[in-house]
Image (cartoon, rainbow, N blue to C red; front, top):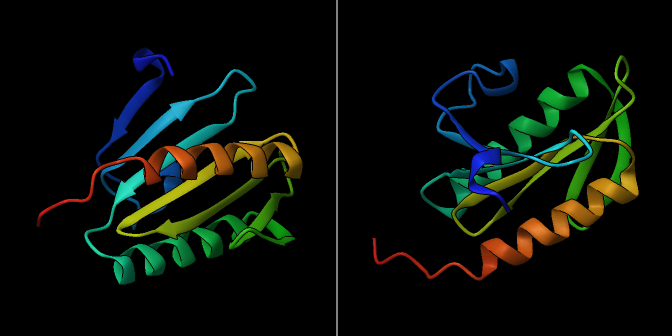
Length: 120
């Protein structure tokens, strides 16, 4: 991924007041991947749940797969979701459809799992 496509959002990422210290990467299809270091697995899981609820506020349930409760945006007709992977909360926002969202999430999870574990 091109480093120029990655940005840092200190607070209010995606207009969610709880979304702080979020790294966002834009994809060619205009969807976005995001990653947050939540500190521990429990915090990451709680944050993923909050993102899921937030995404559903803009739309409807789009099903569950691979540990993600997906949401379809009623205005943009895009798919978004988040999940916890260890101390990380990862997600996809604005994918054109569920297969694209699932594929992007798999790739992001594969990359996160390759990171070395923190000593802290």
